[in-house]
Each structure stands twice: as C-alpha cells, then as structure tokens.
Length: 187
Image (cartoon, rainbow, N blue to C red; front, side, top):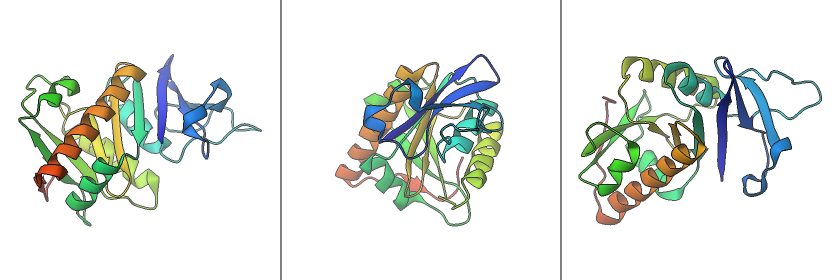
C-alpha cells in the first residue's frame, strides 16, 4: 500500500493519515502538515500523519516537488534490501532500461537511486534524505529505503505515482535477470 501527499499553498502539504487502508482513502483521511517540518498543523482531535511524513518533508524542503508518494512494492523492497549498507546510503544503478524515461531525467539512459537504511527513527531517515538531496540537486526523483520500499516525487500525484511504478518495474527486471547493480557508496 502507498502513502501519498501533495503540496498545498506553501508551506503546507496534505499527507495520508497513519494506520489507514490505503486502498480506500477519502478526503477526511488526509492530514495537513507543515511541508518543511512535518508537524501536523491541526493535531487536536484529528488523525496523526503517516510515520513517513519526515521523509516527505525532506523531499519538499530540498526539491521543487509538488507531490510525494511512498509505497512498499516487493521488487523494489527486495532490491533495496540487497543494496543496503548499515553505515549509510548504498545505491542501485539503473541503466539501459526504457522505463528510465519515466523518471524525467535529462539523461534517460541511467540513474542512481540512493538506498537509505531503515532506521527506527524515521526523522533520522528524513535528515539523511535531506542531506543527500541537498548534495545531489540533480538526483533522480526517487529513492529506496532498505526493507521498506520506494519514495518518489513529481510535479503532481499522477507523476509521482507513475515514477513509483517505473522504479518498481525496473527493479523487477533487475531481479528477474539476476542483475543487482548495487554498490556501497551513494553517488
């Protein structure tokens, strides 16, 4: 299942509430948060934002994203597990796949996706994501979290969701062909 969010007039974003069936979301299932800090803006009596809100906020702070989507698809999660590094980000290299065009990169023949450790403290993941994106402003609009899935972003929810699907399909191809394209240091 996925968690999603989109910016509303800055510095705010709507994000999926915690603990909900993502297959049947409605307008009342969204939480208004500060897009820079991940803090819920109306916490009294309302839903709590998704635990991944810190990661969404990191993307909003460091990119021009209009929407962020997080999902737990099996192939990307498996490949992230294989590429994970306990000390910090690893990476998965995607190259030569037609679906790379779906990431909207200037050079659609390759992309390096960082793989972040799945720290119990999601704020730590968010901090590492923000640091990575600040250091790599032309990074692909997607990242992996070991044992946890994909986060992708775009101009709107449709584009972010499409990028999730592209990454999952490319991860599937890599695993089915026996190609891992994983390395230790994120670049």
